[in-house]
Image (cartoon, rainbow, N blue to C red; front, side, top):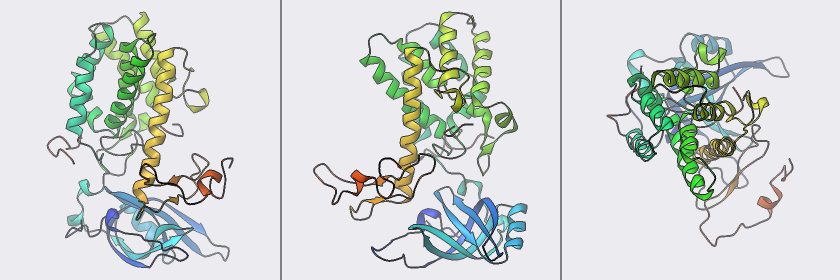
Length: 370
């Protein structure tokens, strides 16, 4: 995937760690987005920098050992940098050791090269979500969804927004991908439990993260929080959006349907400690919380698998994931395959205790997981 200006993409940088040894050093040269630079000090008092290099295909950790002050100044002035270095390993994980870093030439920078993108078609996902909405019964929930997504600005932002700055679905189209996944699962669960109000559940599933369209900035890299996002947060922003359209439909915000929908948005993080002002207190709110939580974590694990794909069917452990306080066993086993040893049962070192539609992909101009 090398380009004339960009050079290597992250996905081009292969890493093979032979058993019992380190990966062979590989030269890396290209233009990347430098993220989260932090200057630290060794025990000997020498400065070094930790950072991440990213583009639309992924990201890798990196280090700079020399000329740290100069490198930090360059990154502070523009995060687009031209680097050369070597791919090495640290604690069995790949990282780039940067030998030289300079500002990237403006003519070599294309914004679309540096914004990560959903692997799925935005157009196809949107069509499926619209089909689900059309399949709902007429009434206040359906009228609310129709009103919200008839607004051009809201619809365009919803289709292209990421679902988070980091961790899960943190790419263009991520909000739509996450919302569709949660809605699909909620639709199946509503068919399983006869007591569930299907229309309320689906409406809450579709709207639970709508505040992300105002919480996050994503017209250019890096994806980050807006001022409103930092000060108010997506739950409150989502409430504001929904109540604004309730007034336009109109739907009485004091009606039972309105209160049930708003309760789902307010409570979908599940706990006050996780950012929800109230805990789930209806069947529909409980289902949404669990499905939302599951989908975000599964996406996180899937990203780990993409970053370190299994080679020749050989399963492997990830590095320790502090967010979830465990390692993950990455495998690609077919039915009938078995694990060769008991490592997966014991949990490794810590144990159990321890194709894009380009016509529709154009960009529109805080808790642990969200």
